[in-house]
Length: 70
Image (cartoon, rainbow, N blue to C red; front, side):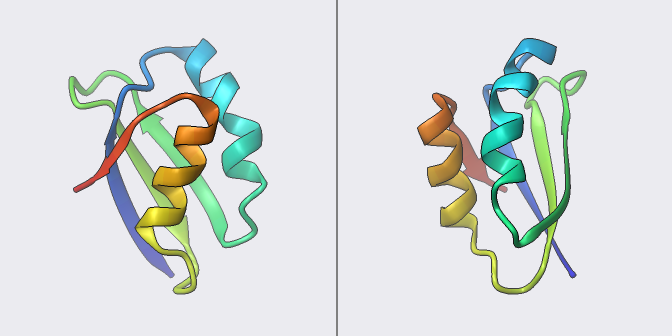
């Protein structure tokens, strides 16, 4: 298992609802969560070793959000 962290602009439960189908469609992801209380809005992704950060960034862009790997 690998853990990736990203700074995002996912700010609320509505944003989370928007990105959920996009992130859930990535079979490499076993679990993900966004810390909306953190000012950096940190997305933590637990995935197998076959997932790279660019895939997550591009997937969030398709949903209309920005992510930068930490």
